[in-house]
Amino acid sequence: MLALQYIRENKEVLLKGLEKRGFKTPKIIDQIINLDKNRRTKQAKLDMLLAESNEIAKKIGVLFKSGKAKEADTLKEKTITLKAKTKILQEQLQNITSHLFELRTQVPNVPHEIVPKGSSEEDNEVIFRVDNIPNAPGNGLPHWELARKYDLIDFELGNKITGAGFPVYKGKGAKLQRGLINYFLDKNTAAGYKEVQVPHLVNEDSGFSTGQLPDKESQMYHIQNENLYLIPTAEVPITNLYRNCLLDISELPIALTGYTPCFRREAGSYGAHVRGLNRLHQFDKVEIVRIEEPEKAMNALDQMIDHVKSILNELELPYRILKLCAGDLGFTSALTYDFEIFSSAQERWLEISSVSTFNSFQAERLRLRYKDSNGKKQSLHTLNGSSLALPRVLAGLLENYQGSKGIKIPKALVPYTGFDQINLDDHL
Image (tube, rainbow, N blue to C red; front, side):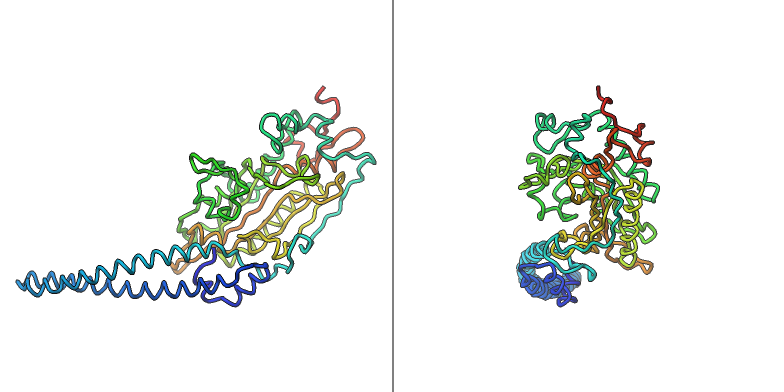
């Protein structure tokens, strides 16, 4: 959520950024500015009335002590009138504040100045690419067929237990999945991220603070009786560890990592492009989250990008990095870089990570501040990224490392799996 001060002082920049996004209701900015002006005017009047009431209360006390009860009673009559005016102003302020808050929640983040123009994923800008695409055998299979052939993942069994999009990992498939999780966590902690284990259910406040609610409510699984939500990403509970916090500058930066299962309804997703592991309702992901001073946030974003690159380089997977255009940015993001790996069997790119900075947008919702070196309260910047999401990484490993004698395991993963090859007779 954008700070009111930012909206007041940067109207033209804000409108230009929202236009870049294709924001459909720019008039809402004038509504916010006018409503905020009205709020501040009424707040000033209320403050004057309260100050006047306090002064009269002191005078009444003095008059009673001096035995001037009649004069004190006259002033008491005036306080009754002031209280009535105060109550009206307080009610008006409450309504204005509530409406102002509601309007602000409808405004997305302002794209960073380096975000390219564009309206869809076709306008995203490729900024980096590693083309170590393997020479897959002529009869190279997609990962869902490899999973069946080597008995690694059972999609039908998951469908029987729960429904489509809830796979069952088996044998070396389960070990590879577990190995990837541990590998990602170890890489993250070695890079300075502190590991945390967090709940997989969150309340409404947590969903709102990171921007999932109300924007992505239709994509989240809701437990109605307790009014809780299954997390769509570990970003939500990890970032909310610092909701309603005032940090000291000595506590910064904060760098956290955590593994969780993630749950997404993915309503309306059908077709071949969501087959197998391409899109699931439940999947595993390791997340990295950072909380930074504003002037250090962009450098932190670069570090996060380099970190994810180092992991993919170790896995020796073909990948590319895209800078998302304004029209493809998430509601809360100011700047996002997507990582995609190449699926040799499907002959297309699969997204495996988004690394984003939100500037102070999430921090404003979180009510997350810090005291600078002068003791002044300042907004913080939040960042997060997938490091990494497992399903498509696993799909890429199976497809890109398949061969005539089985599926090889990258050297970096062997210490985590305990095997360097998946063979056809492993499950027999």
